[in-house]
Image (tube, helix red, strand yellow):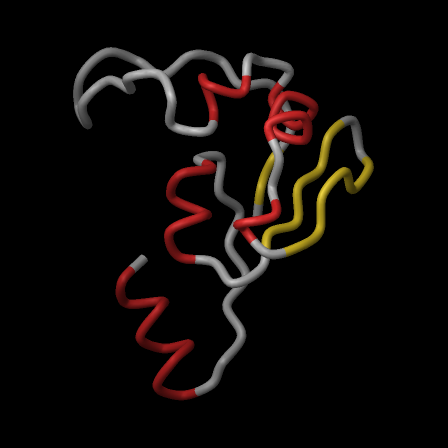
Length: 88
């Protein structure tokens, strides 16, 4: 992700990523587009993503997807099934 960020900032090239981690997306992206059930449910700046929209995206409690709950360490336990929604 750091390399993609450098490409974007240094060369001004738009980067589109399909990410399923809201924390990662919020850290790197200037704009998020979230889809659920084949429709766009969010399109905006990361700081405007609300708990309600996060729940709609992932059909989970907002704390589970917004960083409130503790996540397993990389390489640790498997991540929970998050459905078919994606934040890009």
